[in-house]
Structure formats: C-alpha cells, structure tokens
Length: 231
Image (cartoon, rainbow, N blue to C red; front, side, top):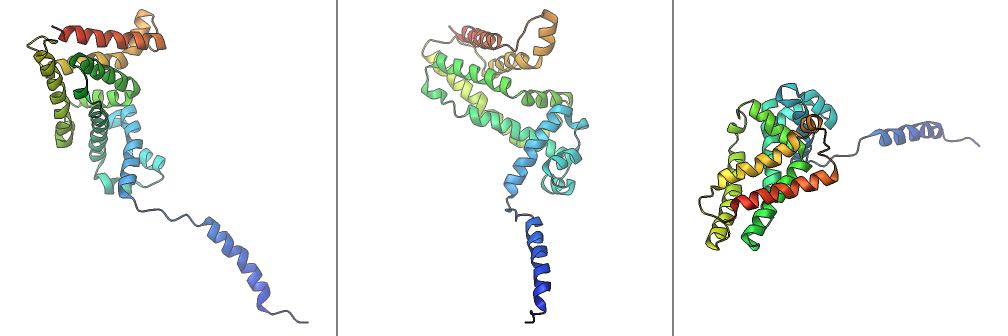
C-alpha cells in the first residue's frame, strides 16, 4: 500500500520545529523598574570597586546581559548612572533608618540604637563607604546634582534632633548638643571602623575583623556617644 507523499516531509519538519521552539527565548516581562534596579545593583559593585573614572559601562552591560544602549536609555550617561547609584545607596540606608522607631524608646536607648544601627550598617555595606569616599574625591560634584540625596538626609538630622530634645527635656542629655555635629561624630566613628581596618590592623598588628574585635569596637562606639550626650 502506498504511503502518503507528505508523511516523510512532515516527519523531517517536526524535529526542526521542536528544536526552534526549544531554542526560542522565553518572553520577558516588560518591567522597567526591575530592569533599572538590576542595572543599579550591578553598577554599584562596579563604581564602588573602581570609582567613576575606572568603571566601565560595557562591563556593566555584559554582567547584565544587555546592551550599553539600554543602559544609556535608562540613565542617559555614565555620570547619570553614577548619580543614580549614589541616590540608591543613600536611599537604602535612610529607608532602614526610618524604621528604627526611635520615638518608641527612652532617649538614651534611642540614641544607643541609632549608633548601633549606623555601626552595623557601615560594617555590612563597605560598598557604601567606598562610594562616599570616591564622591569626596570628586569634591561632591555629582552628589550636588542630586536633589534626592539632599532631601533624603534631612529626616536623619531631624530624627536625631528629636531624640536629643526629648533627652534634654527629661534631664538625661546635656544642653548645647548640635544634632548635625553629633551625626558627623557617629558617622566618623562608624566609617573609620571599616575604611581603615586593613591599614590599622597591619600597622598595629591586630585583627579588627575578628568577631570579638567587631563586638568590642561596636560597644565602645555606642558607649562613647552615649557618655558624650549624657548630662
């Protein structure tokens, strides 16, 4: 009995079609915000490791499996992406800080919690410190272009001001404390803890990254600030 003529062709076409379907990429969900966030995450590592001058957009694009054109579409330029990275870095820190609920604690407990949080955050996010140090090398040129960053940092000072005022009203903290000055001191102690740990450890032959050293230094910083503020 004769077989239909088209059967052989059909059998050859079927594997080809199946192969094409398997090779076809899955449809991607159009999610600009997610794409933007992913680019910023990769770019944060690149900029924090190499600075603005050393960072390369093509390496960021390669890590993202996307094109340089796509990155420029979202951020306009390398400098635009760098500013977005700075904004995201400050935003993350301030967002977590705003969830500490310091108003629910006694004034000194609130201050201790804020200092402990700052020490812990800087230790856990050395990339944030490297970004800030790099921007200081640019004398704040790019940070000055961001209204977002300046707006984000206002609540941090106001939150500390309220803690100090409550403590002064309750007779716990002494008068004359400037919240901006105290904020700077807290930041200085917390940043040095990370930024200088390698050189300090080598010079003085100590291990600042051991668990015991980290805990001891954290407690020391909290106690120093608390005693400084106490009446």
